[in-house]
Amino acid sequence: MENLKKFNTEQIKIINNCVVMAEELASNFYKMSASQWVAACAYDIKTLVDLCPEEVVHGPFAQIIRYKGKRKDSFLDSSAYDYYKICIQDQAILSALKEWPDLKLFPFVLYIVSHELIHILRFTKFQQYFEASPEEMMAEEAHVHEITHRILFDVNVSGIENVLIFYEKWRMPIDDLRKL
Image (cartoon, rainbow, N blue to C red; front, side, top):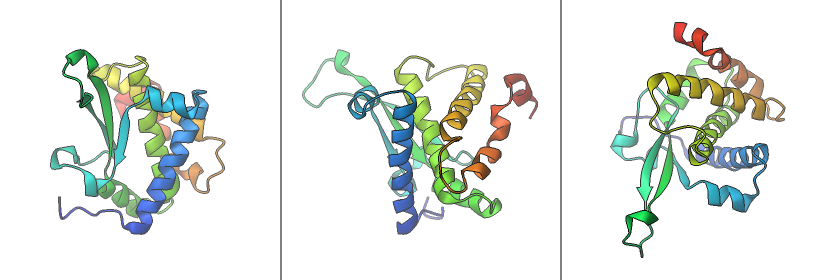
C-alpha cells in the first residue's frame, strides 16, 4: 500500500469540499433535512491514507464496505446497525486524472462521492439490497448513475460537463451495458 499514490494536503482539502457539497446535493435531491440525513445514513468516507489493506481495491474509484455497528453500552444483537464506509481509491482517481486531462479533481470526486452516497441511501431505505446478484448490481449501477447525472446536471461546477460525458456509457440501458 505504501507504493500507491495518495492525495496530497491540497487535494484532501478539495476532497473534503466535495464531500460537503455531495452530502448537500444528495439530501436536497431526496428532500431530507440535515438531521434526517444523519439519522438515515450511518457512514464514513476515507481516503487511502486511512484505509486498511483489505479496503484497497484496484480499478474502481471508490467502493462501499458494509460493517455491523453496535453501541458500546449494548450487549444485544438487536441493537446492531449497518455502518457503511466509502473507501476512496486515491491511486485510481489520480491515475484517471492523468489519463484523461479533461477531468478535474473537484468535479470528478464530486460525482464519485455523490454516486456512493446515493447507493448508501438506497441501501438504508431498502430500495436496493447490498448483497445483490451480479445482474441486479449492474442494473443498480446504471440506475444510480442516472440519478447522479440528474443531481449534477444543473450544478454550477466548472468541469462537471466533462465528468458527465466520462460517465455517459453507464447511463445506457442495461442490455447495452452488458455488451461493453
